[in-house]
Image 1 (cartoon, rainbow, N blue to C red):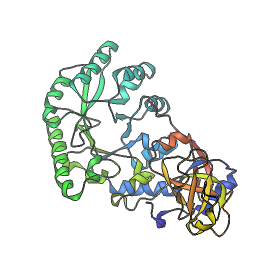
Image 2 (image 1 turned 90 degrees about the vertical axis):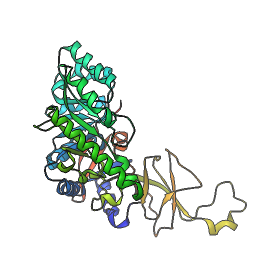
Image 3 (image 1 turned 120 degrees about the vertical axis):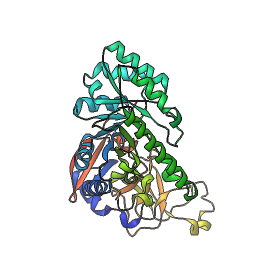
Image 4 (image 1 turned 60 degrees about the horizontal axis):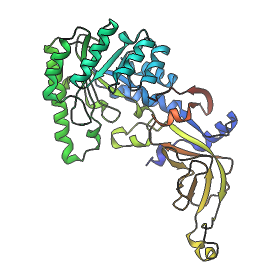
Length: 389
């Protein structure tokens, strides 16, 4: 749950939206909170560690630009062919590390359409077969491709096992069409493990990263600088890695707007900065239960106030009006979702209700744009980047 003390002044937000002429559901970013989160993240990154901003979590160009600028980021981590196309065109100077292996056909399409892709993208390979596919692609096009190896450091969602890393490094280094830059090992499971399991799992992950860094160093692999690329971490763990673990860079994104899935002790100090706002269409202070008209007078003690919002079924939870949540009687709806809660002093019809998104990467593209709130007014509208496929 989002703590009440960390919520914005939604009455002020409603006035800003009304002054802006907003009358439909929208996504609102508090610019001051976002900048404060960036400053806090910058202060928590370990000395000597680079930063890579996760593009899918901040899927709007101005949002991404601010994060890259304020964090002094080395580049971005990109997850889809569509977003890679957009960013290579709009921000040709950005360096990309793919956050998942793309099918080789999708990579071929990017290379066909974006002339700078071979220089700006580090493609992720996770198996000997995929390494061979990317080598064949590079040879067929007469180019050299930058690649990194996805290393399984305990998540077990794929990637090469630490014991098999040396063999894959050897294979890639024997392919002149590929330039090995380093490894990427993702570890979101660590933040969710119980304390009994966490210490051992974290130690194993750190040993795997340190061993990978040592191996790559011995093999003469270099990333953006003279050292090999060793990327790990995420929004919940980025401040726990640095040179001591052989890590050259960490990735983060979601914590900078702090959706609900990232409200944990690990993100204390960061503020939720992104909310869904939607008009309230209806309000009943003492709503009868549907289908029970004959006995409703006897059930008055069970009734709660309800309100109906414009739209619904978004990835998120109600946070305003305070005390309201999804109605167990009416269920979820994408048309007029009903919330229930305590009676209000005045009807909230034509005011705005607010939800805290559970994540940013699905919600930003769904709304298509972000309204930027700064100093109590809506100052800008930022278009979302596509990240489908």
